[in-house]
Image 1: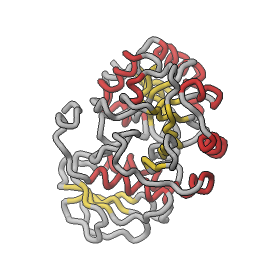
Image 2: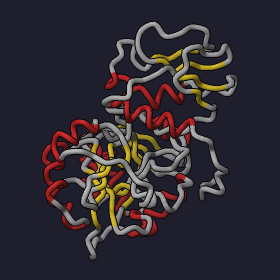
Image 3: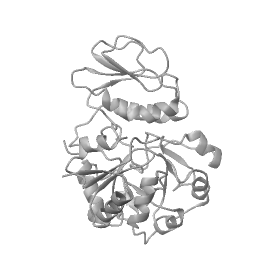
Image 4: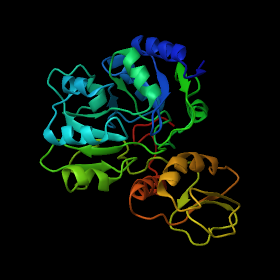
Length: 326
């Protein structure tokens, strides 16, 4: 039975004890809620894959409390130091070479010689990491490939009985997963747009490249079909159908949909990002034929929102073929 508790100091101490015991805790970050376990414990990390039905080739992000511990788990280079000074703690994940004697489970790397690492900003996440005293592996706290959770109730609706405790601290501030940048090669590669705009990163370390397809799933969120609601999505829609839900952006959205939710009537991409996953979940109604989405600008956080939408709208392979549970 899953317990849900307000994130008081007592609840955080209890969550830390659960983590140290090798079990699972869902906790808030500034991006989305994470499903966490002791990243140094193989069995605990494997439990995340089991709870999510997650493909074993999809790596996990290792969350740390402070930068001083980073060099214990990965090789740190100058670009990583520059980005850490500029944006950590915050919604940025860096993929760096694993240290040969890194204590982090190889399951977190999904067999790769790299590791995705992040210092979260959320005070509850930071308090939990401090109290647990170990790195915490934590993908989004939802079943694999489904919509990421931005509230504790989202987590409970999907992972009831699969996670020991959920720490509830209200809605996530950013509402999109972290931006992921691969720094293992000569060029910095944007693996996943997210809660930190690519333009801000480029202002610190220069141009980012896009993945060339040569590296296999170096980051979470790189499956072609991902972040998907149950209903099919239509993108860049000007006229929704009467049996569709409409996910709108900006003033004066088109009429005619069965139900409409507007990510930001003011056209604010930060507001839209914070609302995105919650609204996508709310519109995923079985009585409707699909979800229509109005155009969203391809700039700033709009890049991350559109990335999620394209993956959610992609053709969906059989779950068994992708290594997921039905």
